[in-house]
Image (cartoon, rainbow, N blue to C red):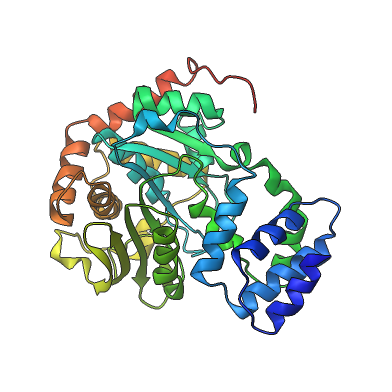
Length: 357
């Protein structure tokens, strides 16, 4: 098998070509290839270290085995935003990026939120949105229609990437061996709506610049990748209100740059990690409702405002983070964000799901 030969090459520290990546993906998704062989390949690649070019090639190849939204020309000329994290920080915060996605949509940004059920947390984006009454298992056609009608659609990863089932056993083996793989990295890169703007949180400092480079390689117009510091605890896969933020950004009109900055130029309340911690699905849904309806005005609101400020800037809806903060405040205080959730929940039973692809 070619994948075994490529594993040997990886152990010799050689970089794979795009053509080799494509062939490797074909065998990774082949159910007749054993989980052990697949795991050996994924581990060899991770140990050697994936390059930005290889990761972009994996995403492009994997996309050919996934479903995408039909009629993308309907959104031409508008920025299409996703806000997500890689997960894995194990710090137990509430669903910050999901809340931010709702705020940005309420502020007038077109948002395609790509996500899944909980893997490394108690409450994944799919879990909490479902509890809030938002449709999560939309067909590609229904997701397109939701974007057009509501400016928001949730794209449930298993619905759009059915071929990934062939990787489940291999990924489990890798986890049992204590080895992360490229799939810990590329989840945020696989949005089937093909967003043009993306705010991505990563839980490892060494992933900040490579993630931004891969998104640039994939042709996004506006990108921000962040790892937020939590003193003594590691990194949030969000912008942090309780420590410095390590950021890589790319904008077609301005180029690529990295920075490390404090959030304390914003009007933040004193807070700690404990005040950002969430719970299970029901608890996190209650937190989101409280934030959107204005009853929670504590440190969790600050975390949403800071990340919304960045997301609105990345989406081109604000000219700076400060302007993005002000727009996020207005969106929450005006009731628009709470209204967006009511609208999405109210339409859930009416959305035409269409036949499964």
